[in-house]
Every structure is written in structure tokens, then in C-alpha cells.
Image (cartoon, rainbow, N blue to C red; front, top):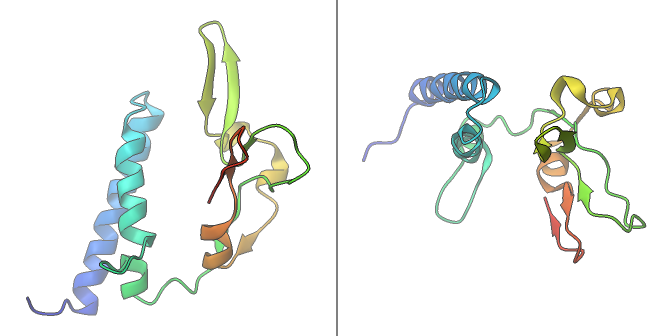
Length: 133
């Protein structure tokens, strides 16, 4: 298989961004299962393994800064850490939701961090103290 050109990779990036926009709108319109497709696009854009290389790595774009909107992990906290989500309680019970426009302003004023810091930041700690980045 011939190596993809930078132009080919840029076209793939444009497609992935369009997928993000469409899936985000669908999620916002109430189709919560769309989160799975959003995760696939994020994997294509960012996740590197021994067998595959992310699109941003192929384009040499992982050196950009990423917005850090997760709450910081506090190891002294006895509760679970939900760094990228909030709990919303309503008439139908509780559910996990992304904070987006409803989160604390402190989530959005922290600025940007390197990809490695962003990708490896602890964003979830369960009741057994298992950590997830």
C-alpha cells in the first residue's frame, strides 16, 4: 500500500473534524449513544499503539497545546473523582453528564497543557482507587 501524502492526511483530518461536529450535534440533540462514535474519532486522532499511529502523530501535530477542562485529581479525596463529568440530579434520577456550559468557570480558565500531560492526566478514580487517564 502506498504511503499517504500529507495532503491525504489533511483530508482525513478534515473528515474526522466533520465527524466530531456531526456526532457532537447528534449527542446534544439527545442521542447519548453517539458518545461511542465520538470516542472512535478521538482514538483515530490521538491514540498511538505499537500497531497503529494516530492521525495527529502522522501530521506531526501532537506538539500543540490542549485545553485542560478536567478537575484536578486530589489523592486525599475519599470520594471517587469524576474529572470530566458531573452528576446531574433531576426528576428521573441521577445521570452523568459532561459539564460543558454548566460546569464551574474554573474548568475553563486553566488554559492549555502539553499533549502528554493532557492525555495522561488522571481524570477518573473509582471507589477502589483505580485511576484512569
